Image (tube, rainbow, N blue to C red; front, side, top):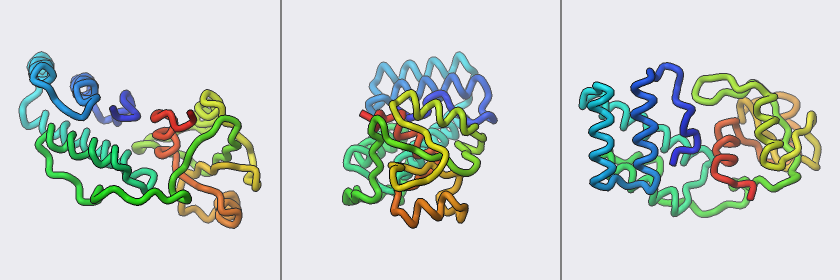
Amino acid sequence: MLALRTAWPRTTNEAEVLYLDTLDRCLDDGELSHEEQVWLNSTARALQLSEGHRVEMHQRYYERLVKQILADGVVTREERALHDKVAAALAIDGDERIGEETETDEKKVVKLTPGMAVCFTGAAMVDGDPIPRPTLENLARQVGLHPVKSVTKRCGLVVAGDVRSRSGKARKARDLGLPMIDATHFITLIARGASR
């Protein structure tokens, strides 16, 4: 379910990674069936994880989901429903930042379309880890986007290390009214198949 299924923070140990991956698979539909709960419990026992440790990992998982939902500044009906299901399944009080779904705003919603020119600027970070620009450019190419070196009116998107940046490329993107997102949002869009 999470767009970055295998990208757990480096501070996560192997047992935590295995448990979080199992949790993610169990929550593919946002719910935990009886069989999935049994699978999670047996995984936790095999990994020798305490109940307190599991609760902490459920909270981390949930926080990552919230971060992904809020990444584009728009909460869709589907995202709201998924949030509510996961919060209930994990017995976590919902994050008030999710609120009600927001109206779709064409300026906020970014759609990746094959052939779209994308310019990258600044040092990209995802969950505190640096992502080299060539890696982002390769991801863009894999979904049919066209990485470019400079911001022009032909650009469909600017991916910035910091969307509040005052760099020359970021300023030009704002002047041209181009959508600008960070690397986390960009990777989330690719994982969700937004280039279809």
